[in-house]
Image (cartoon, rainbow, N blue to C red):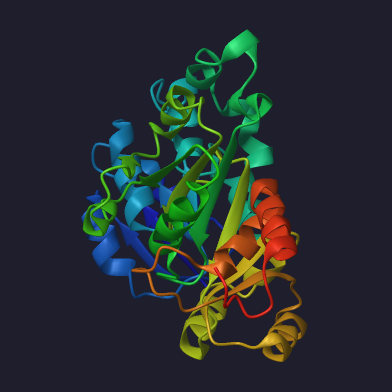
Length: 330
């Protein structure tokens, strides 16, 4: 079942032949919608953009993207020059808002066939990135790896895992870690950790393109559009998995061929196989609960090797060849 939030286009949206569980009309602050729908289960929200107060200010949409799961929102745009400008549309995409249209008839299609980044990439302006890199190439062509870490189940541990991976990678690589639209890094007491907004992430990456790796804590709702690869975190507890499936039955279908990481996991190898069978998915890696106060985690080194960070692979081989059986004589 879907919800409709309308204003200027109320009469047009009323003609939609879709299942609707709730329909509200008027002008709303982002906080109003968050309060009404945070614990309200629905399939898609069809949002008339004019129902948002001050919607022509792109930061209003940014606040929406931080507070709500924008993958479940279909945005009906108005015909104003600002909203239809390349800069505004590019801003929507940077926030992960891919499902937008000016055509009411297209909404029903988007409910069953949501856009991916590939479908809207032509509207995404990355000039701020390409202008800051060498020889007119983008940061991918410089060999920079921008790895997004995104929660699939709520609060699956992206912030802590980003921090731990950054500490591990820093032993062998020039790495930067940044969080998007949050300020949780301050609680880790590490002044090298950075924060930025969804809108400023492409520019942040461009300005730090001399790094070898940038880890991006996308948390629950950050856009993946600026990342060269993404790790999708699932905490495989029964309640969290049931909430995930109730929210979107097609979750694992959408994650097909993605790098699924089981995080804070108590599953053994056999359990992981059962999980893959039931979810019809493939687990890329299984991470148990980790002590974030420790500086070394062998399991994270194994993950980094699997991700292709060969310097860890080489050091592991070297240590294996020179280690002694009981390591008594040092």
